Image (cartoon, rainbow, N blue to C red; front, side, top):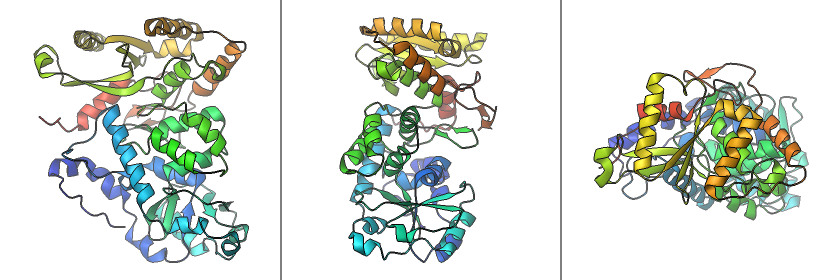
Length: 427
């Protein structure tokens, strides 16, 4: 697959996207092989493709207006992801035609050929087995033990597929979310929604990839897709989960913290209003002389209350240099009228300390937590699902990953990664 060079884009923007553009191209050798029946990767296999980062460039929108730098912060990332999702819906897709034909005609459509499957496995060696593919009828199923065919006899809405290579497609992030709703528990589905709408990716080997330069999709795009998906399997659970999502989470820990605080009481949360994650506060020209930076990213930000909740891992929360940096940042944000609160890993893993911190935050937000019957049990179940200890200490990009491990990456570390590779803001 060849990518057209983006028009009206300067070298600075091209440099920012160069690392994902080259990885998104499907190898030339596969293009010569995938010439038979269309192969539609779905469910877990499609999710692995999107988590790999190899195809990020296929989801990247064209720069809007005079926008010539890497998007930073909640508003820009969400805007770009939503624009890209709308473009996918407008684009013509031969794969979708297989699911808009009559049921009688679908019975005569062949399934993926063995040569097509071998080509996919050869070129995309990171995919786990079995390979999940979507077919239009039971007659098209492949009986191979290394392939699992999912039959979909219902029409699929626009934006259901993204082309990876010649006659090779994958379920779009939106369709993938609905498909995974058929196999994941509800809490895991909500976690996946945060990830698809966030800037990190959790891999099967336990490692986490941080600082993805774009969101795979947006909450609004997921909601639009679910509303247009009719009665395809998984749509009921997906519709419930979408209502609980918040975009732009930068780590599994931010996702867990947001879910613990903001899920409804019956789901095990505290029912707090949803924050904006990694919200960017720009410093006006009149105040730049008394602050260290031109903008600040707030982990969990409640705009009306002007409260920023920062997550800090145990390691990053100690040390003279770190304490001094936190103090200066807090002073700068206070000068901008923002009240900064912190949540340490020790507080998160201790249910008593977390309960106290959550109630203090609720009071600061002016929210009254009305306890219901069954709340304690629901909270225990939610904490068990979200704060499972990591079984390994695997590292990705030199930083520890995994939800629930004591050394989980702090937001400050993720911001440092951004600073290491970020393009300067436009003057």
